Length: 68
Image (tube, rainbow, N blue to C red; front, side, top):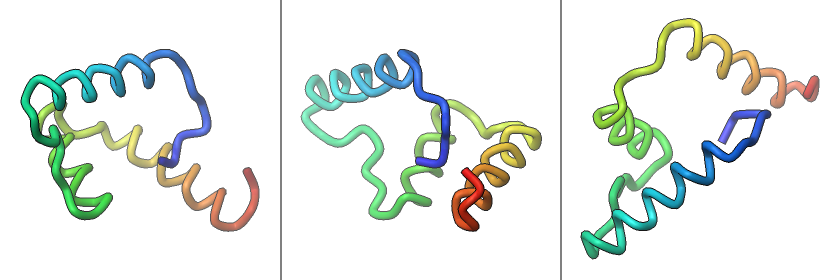
């Protein structure tokens, strides 16, 4: 999505989601839009802190205006 840093944690999260979907035989977070999926994920893992939201918003805006 909007993150600049990639590490193994993302792979573990993704693998866990895929395994859960295989076991459940249904999508784990069946949102129709990115915002809906984020809402479903936050219901499970909790909402990010204000600092985290500002950090990701800054990255997002920087990408839009071409700074990153």
